[in-house]
Length: 441
Image (cartoon, rainbow, N blue to C red; front, top):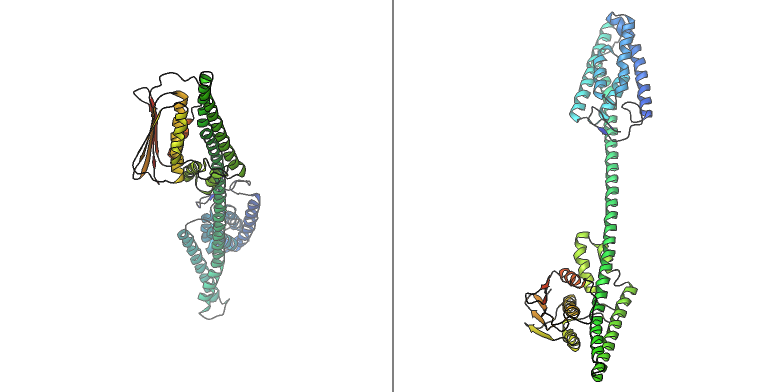
């Protein structure tokens, strides 16, 4: 529960005291001040009643009611000051005036209102003091020069008004400063909590990205060579009795591909053990904002792919002939055409282009064995384009290669990470086409 006073100040603290007080301690303090002020004004009401010619009981009651208004000083400081100004001609309410001005100055009221009420209190005290001193001089109670009346009037009015007013302004400014610092500390705490939550989100995203990258790298390393091994094994089974010499050749090819697959797996596992590959996405995710880390970490994942203990460069476009030769050795009819001036590219661009062609050929082995395949590579001014298209298969493959459906997704992720465009889909002739365009820089 919170409260808002008439001074416009919203108190955000929970109320634990009665009525408008935030704490019981404040209520007790105001009660004591109101009691002392009521006693003072009641005592001062006796001479006021005699001078005014009214019953003493009326003067005492009037003083007690006026002095007890200190009880509402926190809720309505304006009322307290106005009452003190109103009873100043009766020479009552010294404590009421002092405490009222202090409370008014310490409140959140506009400065012009505080200045106006303080000016009224100063003027009222000045006039009352001047009149009383003049009367004393006239009655002969004081025998001073003409300078004494204005001097005592100004001194008394300033002495009663200025100290509580200045103290209240100081306390109010200090209170606002403390509240501002508290709000700033709360804001910083919320920002730190938000940063911690975002850091946790980035870490979780990095872990997911790393798992995806490892799965994609495992797929790139294993799928192509194992697919070729299965194709060769099927061919080996078919010609084992009819053509022993070709069977021996196919067996040697299966062994070579198996050793190459084991070598690449060993290199990749070496990277994971050393932590160089496993921490790439996470380190980048924690170092930059979440919006930028998606592109940066994806590119880092593409750069980190195929890096190993002894093979830092990874596959490149110059190895396409060997890749196509392996597919041709497995019985696939592959036609490679290159357009434009051959040149070198950034390592991540060449690796991605190589992997796109490799995965496309793997898919042909899986789903269109024996179909003629066309591999086109175009070197352009600011980009490199590749297309792998196979004709409709003449028969269903007997190799029965499994497919997880992640090959095309992995290719699209690699190309998109470098700002390229990837398109795949069936052709009108019943075949399948994979196309990709990657910026050269």
